[in-house]
Amino acid sequence: MAEPKTQPTRASVSAYIDALANERMRNDCRRLVQMMTRVTGAPPVLWGTSIVGFDAYRYTYTSGTTGDWPVIGFAPRARDLTLYLMDGFEKRAADLARLGRHTHSKSCLHVKSLADIDLGVLETMLADSVQVMRARYPAEAAAGAATSGETRRVTRTAATEPRATQATAAAATKTVKRAAKEPAKRATKTPAWVSAKKTATKAPKQGVKPTAKPTANKSAKQTATRTPSTRPSTPPTAQAARPCVRRA
Image (cartoon, rainbow, N blue to C red):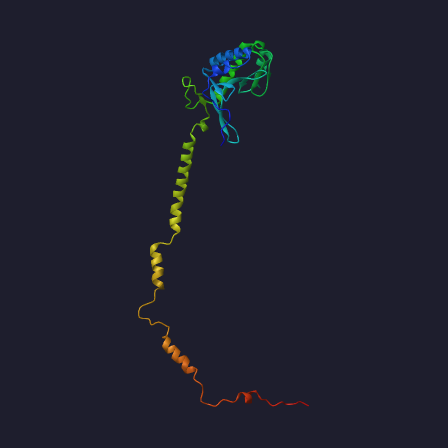
């Protein structure tokens, strides 16, 4: 199964922000890093080449495709800042009305500048989104990695087993099924004592003379039956000649 293209990296988030050409965008990104670190308690991680993410969870589509994604994050774009609130905005109509100038899609919030919105409302929305996502995807043996720079994976219970463990379990199940079929196969085989009895019944009894006569006697009998008779035979022409009776 193919892995998602956007993966967490070990690249420096600070160096990435410092390399942005627009000064206002650089300052807005630094403020977002502080705010999102505060509401998640997780360090910023650069996902792919342009997304700054905080914390992580494992999603599973109905098709079976799985992957990791930040609980919240942002990405500086050419025209605006895109903020990711993965629980969406269906229940945030009141917050959006107080937020300020923005546009949004299913889980993306687009703002031109942080100066155009109410940062208090934004932080409340971010904190609430983190709380919803962590309740929706409970952490299962996911160690925080603030010191190592790795993301903490918040996974579903069904997806916590490593693939190697799942493969081992599948192999063990096949072995058990195969072992269960073995007694049935052995029961259908003919026992050794039955085979020996059948073989013994087919063997000729002792003291019985063979039915076949010697070849020499048979040849002598055949020669005797073929000896021509001493009586003179009628010539072929006499046998073939018959009176022609002409009818009136």
